[in-house]
Image (tube, rainbow, N blue to C red; front, side, top):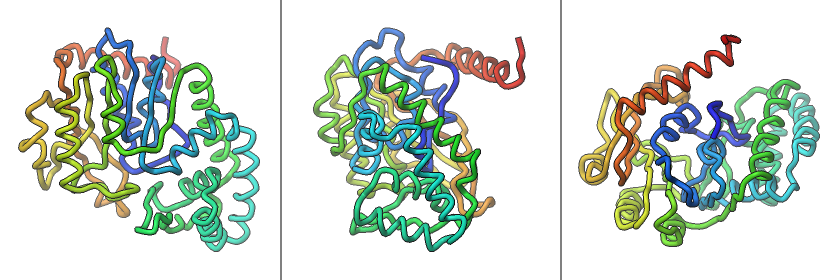
Length: 305
C-alpha cells in the first residue's frame, strides 16, 4: 500500500478518490485474503489499496470490458494516446456531432475505447444507460476537451492501472452482487460501494429499496469481514436505511463534498458513512493515520522535507 492516491481513467459521480485514505485506515492489519468488490465502478479503491489478490465485479459490462482490456494488454497507454488524439482532433473540428456519432457507434459496437471517450467527453463524467442498455449522457459542450495535457493525463492513468495489474492478481467479472458475495470466503474482505439509495441514479441496472435490503441481508449473513460505503445525512435529510438497518453494525462517519451537481449551488457536502461488521480501529488511531497521510501529501506537493 502507498500513501499517494491515484486516479483511474474512468470517471463517475461519487468516485471515492478523496475517501481512499479513510477506507484504507480501517482495513485490518492481519488481512491477507482476497479483496472483493461487488460494485467496482471506477476501481479507484481497489487500485489504491492494491492487495495481492482482488476480484472486482460489476453488472456494467462496459466497465469490466475496459479493465479486462488493460489486463490483457489490448488497451495500452500507446493505444489510448493514439485513439484520443485522433478522436480529439475530429471532435475539435466537428464539435458535438462527433460526440453523438461516437455515442451511436458505441451503443452498436460497445468498444471499450469509445466508452472511455464518452466517459471523458460526456456531461459531468456521468455513466448512465437507458432501459435499452444504451449510453445516453449528453455532450459536455467542450469541443477542445482532448487537449494534449488532458490526453497525457488519461494516458498516465491507464499506465498506472496497467502497472498494478501486472504486479497483482486481479480478476474482473461481470456479475450480480448476490453471486459475488455468495462466492466469497471467510478470509476475504468485501468492500461494497453500491449506488447510494435515494441519491444516485447513474447505475447500469438501477438501485431501489429491494436491492438495499437484499444487500443488507447478504452482508449481515456473510461469514467474513465487510466494509460498506453509503451516505449518512446531509443538510436536508437523513439516510433512513442507516437507522433501520445498517446501524446494527459499526458505523463511522466523515464529511465529504461531491462535485456532482449540474449547478454549483446544488453541490453540497454530505456526511459519508463506512459500515463494518468487525471491530474498527479506534477513532484516535484513525485520525492519526489520516493526519500522517495529509502530512505526506503536503510534503510531496510543496517539496517539504
